[in-house]
Length: 352
Image (cartoon, rainbow, N blue to C red; front, side, top):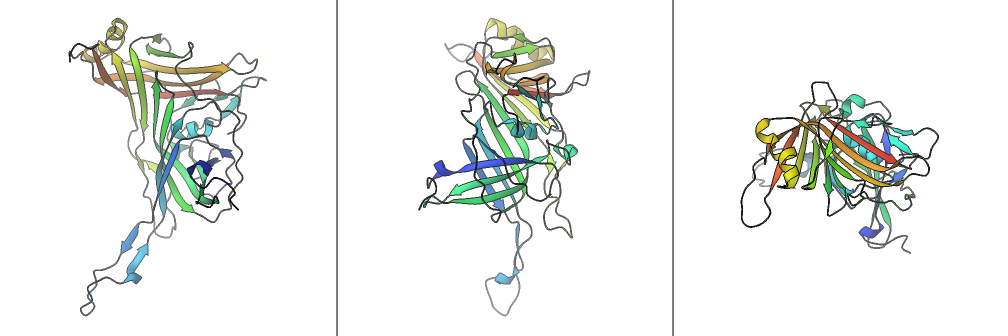
Protein backbone atom coordinates (compact mmCIF):
# COMPACT_ATOMS: atom_id res chain seq x y z
CA UNK A 1 0.00 0.00 0.00
CA UNK A 2 1.40 3.40 -0.97
CA UNK A 3 2.33 5.74 1.85
CA UNK A 4 2.51 8.90 -0.27
CA UNK A 5 2.45 10.08 -3.87
CA UNK A 6 4.82 8.09 -6.05
CA UNK A 7 6.36 11.10 -7.80
CA UNK A 8 8.20 14.28 -6.92
CA UNK A 9 4.99 15.51 -5.30
CA UNK A 10 5.59 13.02 -2.52
CA UNK A 11 9.14 14.13 -1.77
CA UNK A 12 10.42 16.33 1.03
CA UNK A 13 13.62 17.82 2.40
CA UNK A 14 14.34 18.51 6.06
CA UNK A 15 17.37 20.03 7.77
CA UNK A 16 18.81 20.71 11.21
CA UNK A 17 21.77 22.78 12.36
CA UNK A 18 25.01 20.78 12.57
CA UNK A 19 27.29 22.80 14.87
CA UNK A 20 30.43 20.80 14.12
CA UNK A 21 31.46 19.69 10.65
CA UNK A 22 31.83 15.91 10.48
CA UNK A 23 30.03 15.23 13.77
CA UNK A 24 27.48 12.39 13.94
CA UNK A 25 24.32 12.94 11.88
CA UNK A 26 21.60 14.87 13.71
CA UNK A 27 17.95 14.01 13.06
CA UNK A 28 16.48 16.81 10.91
CA UNK A 29 13.60 18.74 12.44
CA UNK A 30 12.66 21.47 9.92
CA UNK A 31 10.86 20.51 6.71
CA UNK A 32 11.57 23.00 3.93
CA UNK A 33 9.47 24.78 1.35
CA UNK A 34 11.42 24.64 -1.90
CA UNK A 35 11.10 24.06 -5.66
CA UNK A 36 13.97 21.82 -6.73
CA UNK A 37 16.81 20.00 -5.00
CA UNK A 38 19.20 18.10 -7.25
CA UNK A 39 22.04 16.28 -5.50
CA UNK A 40 24.81 14.30 -7.19
CA UNK A 41 26.95 11.67 -5.46
CA UNK A 42 30.67 11.68 -6.16
CA UNK A 43 32.46 8.49 -5.00
CA UNK A 44 35.81 9.72 -6.42
CA UNK A 45 36.49 6.41 -8.13
CA UNK A 46 39.99 5.40 -9.14
CA UNK A 47 40.58 2.60 -11.66
CA UNK A 48 44.00 1.01 -11.34
CA UNK A 49 46.15 0.13 -14.31
CA UNK A 50 46.36 -0.20 -17.15
CA UNK A 51 47.96 -3.51 -16.15
CA UNK A 52 49.87 -5.84 -18.46
CA UNK A 53 48.42 -9.35 -17.98
CA UNK A 54 49.40 -11.60 -20.81
CA UNK A 55 47.14 -10.30 -23.57
CA UNK A 56 44.13 -9.17 -21.51
CA UNK A 57 42.67 -6.07 -23.15
CA UNK A 58 40.29 -4.88 -20.38
CA UNK A 59 41.31 -3.78 -16.87
CA UNK A 60 40.49 -5.89 -13.82
CA UNK A 61 37.46 -5.00 -11.68
CA UNK A 62 39.37 -5.60 -8.43
CA UNK A 63 41.31 -2.40 -9.13
CA UNK A 64 38.11 -0.30 -9.18
CA UNK A 65 38.32 1.62 -5.88
CA UNK A 66 36.03 4.23 -4.31
CA UNK A 67 38.36 6.62 -2.49
CA UNK A 68 35.79 8.76 -0.65
CA UNK A 69 32.15 9.74 -1.05
CA UNK A 70 30.76 13.25 -0.98
CA UNK A 71 27.85 14.97 -2.71
CA UNK A 72 26.99 18.26 -4.36
CA UNK A 73 23.81 19.89 -5.58
CA UNK A 74 21.63 22.95 -5.91
CA UNK A 75 18.45 23.90 -4.06
CA UNK A 76 16.08 26.48 -5.53
CA UNK A 77 12.91 28.07 -4.28
CA UNK A 78 11.17 31.22 -3.12
CA UNK A 79 12.17 32.92 0.12
CA UNK A 80 9.23 32.39 2.49
CA UNK A 81 8.28 33.89 5.84
CA UNK A 82 8.67 30.66 7.79
CA UNK A 83 11.24 27.87 7.79
CA UNK A 84 14.00 29.76 5.99
CA UNK A 85 16.13 31.13 8.84
CA UNK A 86 18.63 28.26 9.07
CA UNK A 87 19.09 28.17 5.29
CA UNK A 88 19.76 31.90 5.24
CA UNK A 89 22.19 31.85 8.17
CA UNK A 90 24.15 28.98 6.59
CA UNK A 91 24.20 30.69 3.20
CA UNK A 92 25.57 33.83 4.85
CA UNK A 93 28.15 31.84 6.84
CA UNK A 94 26.84 33.73 9.86
CA UNK A 95 26.69 32.73 13.51
CA UNK A 96 23.37 34.59 13.82
CA UNK A 97 20.45 32.78 15.41
CA UNK A 98 16.78 33.64 15.80
CA UNK A 99 16.32 36.20 18.60
CA UNK A 100 12.97 37.09 20.13
CA UNK A 101 11.97 40.74 19.81
CA UNK A 102 11.27 41.61 23.43
CA UNK A 103 8.33 39.54 24.65
CA UNK A 104 6.49 39.65 21.31
CA UNK A 105 5.72 36.87 18.84
CA UNK A 106 8.30 38.25 16.39
CA UNK A 107 11.76 36.75 15.94
CA UNK A 108 14.71 38.25 14.11
CA UNK A 109 17.71 36.49 12.60
CA UNK A 110 20.68 38.03 14.38
CA UNK A 111 18.45 40.46 16.28
CA UNK A 112 18.29 44.06 15.05
CA UNK A 113 21.81 43.77 13.56
CA UNK A 114 20.90 40.95 11.20
CA UNK A 115 23.11 38.20 9.83
CA UNK A 116 26.51 39.45 8.67
CA UNK A 117 28.39 37.64 5.94
CA UNK A 118 31.15 35.46 7.39
CA UNK A 119 33.39 32.48 6.77
CA UNK A 120 31.50 29.24 7.48
CA UNK A 121 34.70 27.47 8.57
CA UNK A 122 35.26 30.22 11.14
CA UNK A 123 31.89 29.36 12.72
CA UNK A 124 32.55 25.61 12.93
CA UNK A 125 31.67 24.42 16.41
CA UNK A 126 29.17 27.23 16.96
CA UNK A 127 25.38 27.13 16.96
CA UNK A 128 24.87 27.99 13.27
CA UNK A 129 26.59 29.37 10.22
CA UNK A 130 28.77 26.36 9.42
CA UNK A 131 26.58 23.62 8.02
CA UNK A 132 23.43 21.57 8.43
CA UNK A 133 22.45 17.92 8.19
CA UNK A 134 19.78 17.17 5.60
CA UNK A 135 17.43 14.31 4.83
CA UNK A 136 15.54 13.85 1.60
CA UNK A 137 12.47 11.65 1.38
CA UNK A 138 12.44 10.51 -2.25
CA UNK A 139 9.41 8.43 -3.33
CA UNK A 140 9.58 5.52 -5.71
CA UNK A 141 6.60 4.92 -7.99
CA UNK A 142 4.96 2.71 -5.38
CA UNK A 143 4.63 5.74 -3.10
CA UNK A 144 7.27 4.66 -0.57
CA UNK A 145 9.64 7.42 0.50
CA UNK A 146 13.29 6.40 0.53
CA UNK A 147 15.75 8.30 2.76
CA UNK A 148 18.86 10.03 1.50
CA UNK A 149 20.93 11.52 4.32
CA UNK A 150 23.47 14.24 3.60
CA UNK A 151 25.98 14.98 6.35
CA UNK A 152 27.51 18.39 7.12
CA UNK A 153 26.11 20.35 4.20
CA UNK A 154 27.72 23.72 3.45
CA UNK A 155 26.39 26.44 1.15
CA UNK A 156 29.20 27.27 -1.26
CA UNK A 157 27.30 29.80 -3.39
CA UNK A 158 24.07 31.70 -2.81
CA UNK A 159 21.97 33.76 -5.18
CA UNK A 160 18.90 35.85 -4.36
CA UNK A 161 16.67 37.52 -6.96
CA UNK A 162 14.38 40.46 -6.22
CA UNK A 163 12.07 40.63 -9.24
CA UNK A 164 9.32 43.25 -9.44
CA UNK A 165 7.25 40.97 -11.69
CA UNK A 166 7.81 37.82 -9.63
CA UNK A 167 8.63 36.47 -6.19
CA UNK A 168 11.85 36.82 -4.23
CA UNK A 169 13.75 33.63 -5.03
CA UNK A 170 16.92 31.84 -3.96
CA UNK A 171 19.41 29.35 -5.35
CA UNK A 172 21.87 27.65 -2.99
CA UNK A 173 24.78 25.49 -4.16
CA UNK A 174 25.42 22.74 -1.61
CA UNK A 175 28.42 20.58 -0.69
CA UNK A 176 27.94 17.59 1.64
CA UNK A 177 30.72 15.77 3.46
CA UNK A 178 29.12 12.41 2.74
CA UNK A 179 25.80 10.70 2.00
CA UNK A 180 24.18 7.50 3.28
CA UNK A 181 20.78 5.82 3.10
CA UNK A 182 20.66 3.95 6.40
CA UNK A 183 19.42 6.65 8.79
CA UNK A 184 15.70 6.09 9.37
CA UNK A 185 13.24 8.34 7.56
CA UNK A 186 11.61 11.00 9.72
CA UNK A 187 7.95 11.96 9.65
CA UNK A 188 8.17 15.57 8.48
CA UNK A 189 6.10 18.37 9.97
CA UNK A 190 5.59 21.24 7.55
CA UNK A 191 5.16 24.89 8.54
CA UNK A 192 1.58 25.97 8.05
CA UNK A 193 0.87 28.40 5.24
CA UNK A 194 4.32 29.76 4.34
CA UNK A 195 4.00 33.01 2.40
CA UNK A 196 6.62 33.88 -0.22
CA UNK A 197 8.17 37.33 -0.18
CA UNK A 198 7.60 39.64 -3.13
CA UNK A 199 8.19 43.27 -4.09
CA UNK A 200 4.48 43.91 -4.68
CA UNK A 201 3.79 45.31 -1.20
CA UNK A 202 3.85 49.12 -1.13
CA UNK A 203 6.27 48.96 1.81
CA UNK A 204 8.78 46.85 -0.16
CA UNK A 205 11.58 49.08 -1.37
CA UNK A 206 14.70 49.26 -3.49
CA UNK A 207 17.20 51.87 -2.33
CA UNK A 208 20.65 53.19 -3.20
CA UNK A 209 22.99 55.67 -1.55
CA UNK A 210 25.39 56.06 1.33
CA UNK A 211 25.33 53.17 3.80
CA UNK A 212 22.60 53.83 6.35
CA UNK A 213 21.13 56.69 4.29
CA UNK A 214 19.90 54.90 1.19
CA UNK A 215 17.05 56.47 -0.79
CA UNK A 216 14.39 54.90 -3.01
CA UNK A 217 15.18 54.79 -6.75
CA UNK A 218 12.84 54.01 -9.63
CA UNK A 219 13.88 52.32 -12.84
CA UNK A 220 15.24 48.97 -11.61
CA UNK A 221 13.15 45.97 -12.67
CA UNK A 222 15.19 43.13 -11.18
CA UNK A 223 18.20 42.82 -8.88
CA UNK A 224 20.25 39.66 -8.38
CA UNK A 225 22.64 39.45 -5.43
CA UNK A 226 25.22 36.66 -5.42
CA UNK A 227 27.59 35.48 -2.70
CA UNK A 228 30.21 33.16 -4.18
CA UNK A 229 32.61 31.55 -1.72
CA UNK A 230 36.04 30.14 -2.44
CA UNK A 231 36.39 26.98 -0.37
CA UNK A 232 38.85 24.11 -0.58
CA UNK A 233 36.35 21.27 -0.44
CA UNK A 234 38.65 18.32 -1.27
CA UNK A 235 40.51 18.05 2.04
CA UNK A 236 40.84 14.27 2.17
CA UNK A 237 43.78 13.14 4.30
CA UNK A 238 45.56 9.87 5.06
CA UNK A 239 43.89 8.13 7.99
CA UNK A 240 40.49 9.80 7.42
CA UNK A 241 37.49 8.11 5.83
CA UNK A 242 35.64 11.34 4.95
CA UNK A 243 36.91 14.76 3.97
CA UNK A 244 37.74 17.41 6.55
CA UNK A 245 36.12 20.81 7.07
CA UNK A 246 36.27 22.90 3.87
CA UNK A 247 38.48 25.95 4.38
CA UNK A 248 38.12 29.43 2.89
CA UNK A 249 41.14 29.82 0.64
CA UNK A 250 40.38 33.04 -1.28
CA UNK A 251 38.24 36.16 -0.98
CA UNK A 252 34.51 35.67 -1.45
CA UNK A 253 32.76 37.53 -4.29
CA UNK A 254 29.71 39.70 -3.62
CA UNK A 255 28.10 40.62 -6.94
CA UNK A 256 24.96 42.64 -7.68
CA UNK A 257 23.34 42.70 -11.13
CA UNK A 258 20.56 45.19 -11.89
CA UNK A 259 18.29 45.22 -14.91
CA UNK A 260 17.50 48.92 -15.14
CA UNK A 261 15.70 51.33 -17.43
CA UNK A 262 17.27 54.71 -18.14
CA UNK A 263 14.89 56.75 -16.01
CA UNK A 264 15.83 60.21 -14.78
CA UNK A 265 16.27 58.84 -11.26
CA UNK A 266 18.31 55.82 -12.41
CA UNK A 267 20.61 58.03 -14.49
CA UNK A 268 21.74 59.94 -11.39
CA UNK A 269 21.61 57.15 -8.84
CA UNK A 270 23.03 54.32 -11.01
CA UNK A 271 24.46 55.08 -14.44
CA UNK A 272 26.40 58.22 -13.47
CA UNK A 273 28.34 56.24 -10.84
CA UNK A 274 30.19 54.22 -13.49
CA UNK A 275 32.64 56.92 -14.58
CA UNK A 276 32.66 58.62 -11.18
CA UNK A 277 33.76 55.42 -9.45
CA UNK A 278 31.60 56.27 -6.44
CA UNK A 279 30.70 53.44 -4.03
CA UNK A 280 27.07 52.99 -3.08
CA UNK A 281 25.00 50.87 -0.74
CA UNK A 282 22.31 48.70 -2.34
CA UNK A 283 19.30 47.77 -0.22
CA UNK A 284 16.48 45.41 -1.25
CA UNK A 285 13.64 45.03 1.26
CA UNK A 286 10.63 42.76 0.87
CA UNK A 287 7.95 43.46 3.47
CA UNK A 288 5.05 41.19 4.37
CA UNK A 289 2.26 41.14 6.92
CA UNK A 290 2.45 42.40 10.54
CA UNK A 291 3.62 39.84 13.10
CA UNK A 292 1.00 39.96 15.84
CA UNK A 293 1.19 43.15 17.89
CA UNK A 294 4.99 43.25 17.82
CA UNK A 295 5.18 46.33 15.65
CA UNK A 296 7.32 44.30 13.22
CA UNK A 297 6.36 42.79 9.88
CA UNK A 298 7.56 39.78 7.97
CA UNK A 299 10.76 41.01 6.37
CA UNK A 300 13.48 39.74 4.09
CA UNK A 301 16.20 42.27 3.35
CA UNK A 302 19.64 42.17 1.78
CA UNK A 303 22.10 45.05 1.98
CA UNK A 304 25.30 45.09 -0.09
CA UNK A 305 26.87 47.98 1.76
CA UNK A 306 29.73 49.24 -0.45
CA UNK A 307 29.43 48.47 -4.17
CA UNK A 308 31.26 49.76 -7.23
CA UNK A 309 29.70 49.70 -10.69
CA UNK A 310 31.85 47.46 -12.91
CA UNK A 311 29.97 47.22 -16.21
CA UNK A 312 26.74 48.50 -17.71
CA UNK A 313 27.07 52.17 -16.85
CA UNK A 314 26.48 53.08 -20.48
CA UNK A 315 23.08 54.02 -21.94
CA UNK A 316 22.96 52.18 -25.30
CA UNK A 317 20.58 53.31 -28.04
CA UNK A 318 19.45 49.99 -29.49
CA UNK A 319 16.27 51.07 -31.23
CA UNK A 320 12.99 52.80 -30.47
CA UNK A 321 12.42 51.03 -27.14
CA UNK A 322 13.06 52.55 -23.73
CA UNK A 323 16.80 52.83 -23.12
CA UNK A 324 18.00 50.17 -20.67
CA UNK A 325 21.07 48.25 -19.57
CA UNK A 326 22.22 45.57 -17.16
CA UNK A 327 24.53 47.00 -14.50
CA UNK A 328 26.97 44.78 -12.59
CA UNK A 329 28.39 45.84 -9.24
CA UNK A 330 31.18 44.44 -7.05
CA UNK A 331 30.64 44.42 -3.31
CA UNK A 332 33.51 45.49 -1.04
CA UNK A 333 34.14 46.52 2.57
CA UNK A 334 33.89 50.26 3.27
CA UNK A 335 36.43 52.33 5.22
CA UNK A 336 34.37 51.95 8.40
CA UNK A 337 34.64 48.15 8.20
CA UNK A 338 30.91 47.52 7.81
CA UNK A 339 29.91 44.06 6.64
CA UNK A 340 29.94 43.75 2.85
CA UNK A 341 26.60 41.90 2.93
CA UNK A 342 23.91 42.00 5.61
CA UNK A 343 20.75 39.89 5.68
CA UNK A 344 17.70 40.59 7.83
CA UNK A 345 14.80 38.24 8.39
CA UNK A 346 11.76 38.91 10.59
CA UNK A 347 9.51 35.92 11.18
CA UNK A 348 6.95 34.44 13.53
CA UNK A 349 9.07 31.28 13.70
CA UNK A 350 10.41 30.41 17.12
CA UNK A 351 12.80 27.74 15.88
CA UNK A 352 14.95 26.85 12.92
